Length: 60
Image (spheres, rainbow, N blue to C red):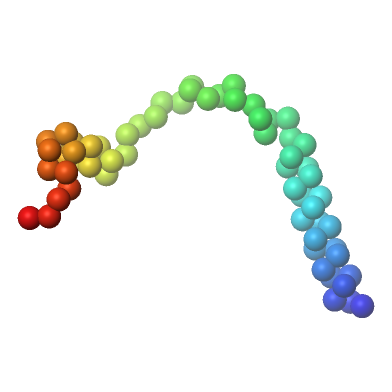
């Protein structure tokens, strides 16, 4: 009996948390998209430079 209660309680609390997260007004708000500056990651910059040089990342 306790096991069923514990499972029902935890699943109910998780369902409540999901319901509250889905009900947030800022969930689908894209007003901030594009406002922050995107900085290139150093490891991607190095990989892009290698690709432009024609190395292709090959071996040898």
